[in-house]
Image (cartoon, rainbow, N blue to C red; front, side):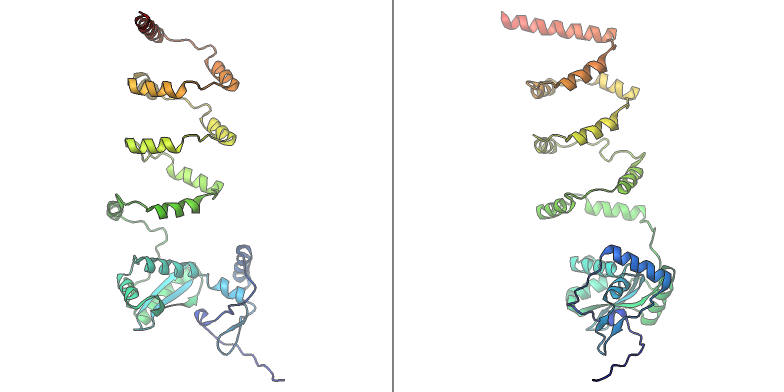
Length: 328
């Protein structure tokens, strides 16, 4: 039997070739534990590879290392032009570059034009080095100085974490998106992707804190008649579940209107068409015993003001006058 000799060697992660039929798969929890092990003990056991860089043992470690912090290179294999970047998740960054190039909206217009000209097969993504987050910029700058990549817009490595766009950029972006709408196919995809997707308590809290104290985006705006009709049709026959009713009740319990709001409600005048719509929507709708009990408890001990009494009396007189005229 021929003996096998082993030796330590240095290889780039991008040069290693996992066995495509490897049956073992790593889930998120296992990957998290493996990352913690790397941080605490380092890579105690090395990845075993063959003479052609094919991986014999260590597929899970290779998959986790590919998602670690590091510096990467995108190279055009036809003309040798390069792009250097760094990321805290190399695999995610690779997919992001590919997505933007396929969509024709990559930040590097030079690389976008080359991608459109030579095709996706001409470009190779390689990991240059895996390192700690604190070392990302240092290594990225080293490779920028070494390769002088043609596709990079900037020649100095910079950390964009926490970076915010200028007001001018935001205004230009907003103007470019104004009036643009999703296609029906895109709407269906977005709907299916969000359907049944629960929002975590932490996400709800962050969303609430983000909008705290901010005016509603609809303040001062009004829906068109077409939008109102579409909204009305969409809600026909739709009823809130008991759980949703309880949440709404708990959210508004104890909430009172401000004096300004009360005054606006008093001064509001409904048109005849509006009154007819309200009347038609309430006709024939029976009140449940629970609703009657709540209404009774809410109005217990309350009295009408003199102004309200006069208004009610006048309304009754008008109503009976109309009835008499109709009978004669």
